[in-house]
Length: 175
Image (cartoon, rainbow, N blue to C red; front, top):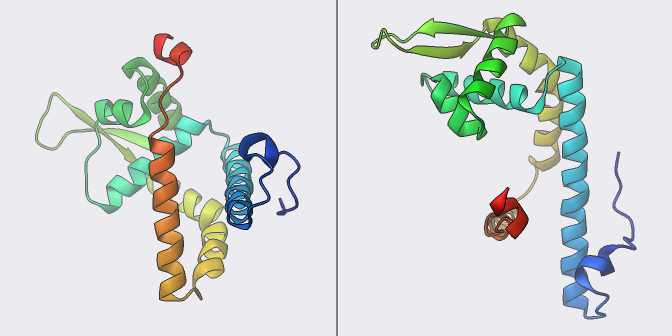
């Protein structure tokens, strides 16, 4: 477990301004960074326990969500979602099909197309693997008041907008 402690490197990113308002903001940003580090570590452990790569697990989550929404998913849609080539998507689907996590099925109305669906076993495995963690997360926030909940949601939305505005560096844009 990662614990929030005085962060000696916060000054590197945010300066060492003695202003109380700025210190609170830096403490909050540090708490977000530590939570993010914990979440990244949890995702790595989940991938390891399921013997999958990041895109494999993202694919399963996307397919399970689409299934709950009664939506069909094509390989092309998965490519767009993952931001990878169609060849990479085919390799992901092949791996997941070989491990019995997904099936390719004919599209119900377009016989030239196929759809990708998760297997029943996949839903069961994901629930077994992530169910306890999801319960702990819910338990951590269930007693928040409506005002506290709104404050956290507003803060997370502002953080999301700030992160979404980051432009790729010049080197990434040319790569």
